[in-house]
Every structure is written in C-alpha cells, then in structure tokens.
Length: 638
Image 1 (tube, rainbow, N blue to C red):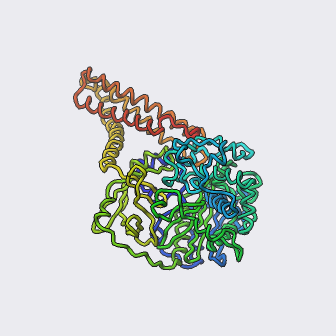
Image 2: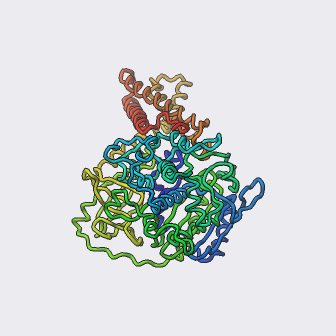
Image 3: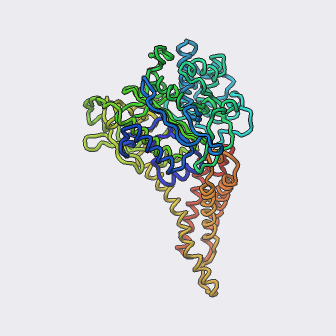
C-alpha cells in the first residue's frame, strides 16, 4: 500500500498517475495523526454504528471487521452482502480476497524454511532457479538474492496494469514468470533500496516450491495455515479456490468478471474474517498458537526488520521484510499489510506492545470506504494503544546536522513508467531551522527530524528511528525511510526541472485560451472580408490541434471511468490514449516546422514569437514523454 506522503503530489502528477496505472496502496502507512482527524472511537458499539452509517452512505456491498487481542477475538462485525444478485449476506465465514496481504504468508513460509535449515536467504536466485530470466547489469558482483525478493530490494518494477488474464485454467507458475519476464529488469544495484514489487514475490513463490519440493500453496497450508487454524483459506484463482469467495464489485457496484492472476503468490489469497483474525492473533503472540510455537521467536523478530538495504546497514531497523511492514500510528509501532485487487480491499495490523490488532475487508474496489472505515477502525485501535516512552535525543553537533542539508531526489520509483513523477514532485529538502533538522517536500508541510543517533532520526511521536542518513558506495549522501529512498543532488535541479515541465504545460494550455479569442475574431473578420485578418494560420492551428489531441486522449481515459481490469485491456479509451500520444508527437514536430517557416512569412512579431514558444513547448513535451515511455504507451501490452 502507498504511503500518504507519496499521495500528496501535484495535480498534474496525479493526473498522470490516474491515467497510466493503478498502484495499490503501500504496505505500510506512516499516517501519524490521520486517525486523530476524527473523534476517537472508544467502544465497539460506536464503531459498529459508524461502519453501518458509512456502508449506507457510500453503498458498499459488503464488509467484515475484526478487533483482536493476544488471547481472544474481541469482536467480529459483518455488514451487507457477499453477493447482491443472490441476496447472500456476509458472514464470519465469507471469503474475501486479501490481495497483497498474501505476501505475508509467503514470507512466513520462508521463515519456516529457515527454521527447518533448508535455505540460506543470501543465496543468489540464479543458483536455485537458473531457468528464470533476470536482467541484472550487476549480476557478476551483486546478484539478486532470495532476501532481496522478500524485502522488495531486488530493484524490479512492480506489476503493470495487465497483470491478469481471463481465459482459464490457472497458468502454471513457471509459465506466469515467463510471461512477465520483462518485470524482472533490475533498475539499480540490488540490495541498496526498497521499492515495492509484486514481481519479486511471484519469483519467491517459485523458489519456495523448488526448495520445499511441494506446490507453494500446499507447503503454506501444511506449515502455516492449518497450524494457525486457517483451514478453509485458499491461495489462487481456480474455481475451487473461489468456492467461498464473495462477489467483487467496482466503485459503481458493478460486478467484476472472473479473472486470473499472473501474480498469484503475491496477491491471490482468499480468507474469511474469522481466519484472518486468527492470523492477527498469531502475530500478536509472536508466532505461536497457544503453547505451540509455529515460528521460533528468534526468527519471528526478523519480521519488519530489513537487512538488505543501505539503510539497514546504517542501523535502521524498521521497514519491510518477510512480507510484513512496520507502520507508526498514535506513537505506537504496528506490523501490517494491505491489499487491493479488483473487487476487494483488505488490511490487517497488529500492535505487539499492547497486544491489539484488527482486520478490515470489503468486496468493493472503492477507496472512499478505505478512507472512512479503515480510518475509524485504526482510530479505535489507536485509542487503546499504550503510551510509549520516547527515546532520548542525544546531542548532535550543529555542524554534523548541517552536513545533511540540501535537496534530495527520490530514487526508488515503484514503476519506472512513473519515475518522472517522483523526480518532478517527489523530492525533499532537508534544512536546519530553529535548532531542528527538518524536511519538506513539494506542496507538503514541514516535518521535524529528531536525532536518535548521529545518523538515525525519528519523527515527533514515533517510538524509534524511522529514517537514516547514509552514503552510497560512490560517496553520494542518502536519506532513507522505511519505504523511501533519496539521494542528494544539486539544489537548482528541481527548480529548473519544474520550471521547464510546468512552464511547457502552461504554454501548451495557453493555446486553448488564446484560441477562444483569435478564432472568433478571425471568423468575424473573414465574414466581413477584412484585409487585416490573421495570416499563416498554420502556426496557430497546428499547436492547438497538438494540445487538444493529447487533452482529448487523457479525457477519454478519465471519462471512461475504467475499472482496474479495464486499464490493462485494449479498450477504446486505452487505444484512444495511445493514438493521441502519437498524433501529439507528429503535430508537435509539424508545429515546430511551421514556426520555423513563419520567419519567411509576413507575420506579426508577437504572433511569430508566441508560435515559437508554443511549438517549442509542444516538441519539448514530446521528447520528455517519449523519454519516459509515454508516447505510444499501450497499457494492454506494457
């Protein structure tokens, strides 16, 4: 699941993201204070009443919620319909797809292999699965290792929009890996930074099969699910796995068709609220069920403590490992994961310090439910979190803190396709102000960094270090958090970059505004047969057509209100967008040519200068979009 800080980007970046792909929210959310924005929910009855009201207000088909302690399931609430068409209501045994929460069980499977002494996580993947292609420019010195897959540090892209298929039967895992081999292109030296990637966990599932000698689903059922009591839970999208599954709906309450997942080990588990409550209880008891230790305590402590990043090497102990991430809310640390797939949203969280956790699941892909209900459930859990004793802040010389100041560029995009958004709006400035080290991002408020050591820092109210300053092998200064990674760069770069990009967009959009004036004036003069009407109209018309073509292509995507499944298909809206980018590129090149030719025509100086600026902006934007792979982008084949 994506952190809130990465949601707060510029309007234009948000448009690009919404058009090009769906990215499920990041595994851990540092949403300190989000739950405090509403009145604290203090009782189960008030929580149930709130959920009932929200369900009716936003017409959510069905949902289930559990509040769990280390020794009991405090409450299970079921709401609405598992299937609107048949009238079947949600019960505590109704299955929901938990999406990326599936990764937590794959991670536990590897902890079990470690416990059995059957695997070394530092083993290069090629030694176990040489038949699986990985494009790694650093292979000789820095191969992708198993631990990198389990901590999202291999450098792979996350799954693209077409991560599903419709024609059964379920595809064998090896073939699914072959179909999506292009996702396993390593973008930077493995083991340096976190970047969420379902593709890595699909490969982890394959390795789990090779090492265990069993189908990964069977190994997990035998060693993890059944010992916990999750006897009806299934992994996969086969008809048998869907037997108890609720119907999934889109935000307009339209049922999704049956679909199959290329990424089954990363996001296709189906569970009931009752069995997920047992899983959270298992987490609260540190890997034990009753008196039976399923995961040894020494191994369990590795959950949420990555070991393969530069940040981990520098001492940061919070983050993502073994399919579970850390988050910090109301001064408390939680182990959590979320999941989002067509028709379903899910999240679980466990606070080991106060022994309380929760699960929320719904059968509709609608983030308004996420924002409302999940926040209230978190608010309930947070209201019972024990107050924590914050670590003391050691004195750090001002001269040391000032060495960290500067601009840091985001360098761990979840998908390379959207790297331009991170570069454009995702960087942060570190400054020393009022005896405090602070960070602030583009269009974001300033946040303080409180020293835990000379390198490690925490945010106000957080109980431990959640960020660190360190260096790359070539000496570049790095600022990293649990799920973000930045490298310091020249402070003039973001200003120049944003000026050029946003300036080009402003110049392009000015053609639409300008057209509202010059077109009626030109028509009027033509009707009146005036001699002083505009000459050489091509230098005005062609840039306008270029801009309108791109705008209409984007508008087609927005107006179509496509589901997450449709984003990865060859739909009219997707094809229209692809064609619009090619037409924009062609018209932009033509506009530059007509602008050049205007110097040999009897054209007013202002008109010529304006045409030169606009045509240059259009052509520059073409080069920019082409560089990032957006000209001719086919989402159904990407």
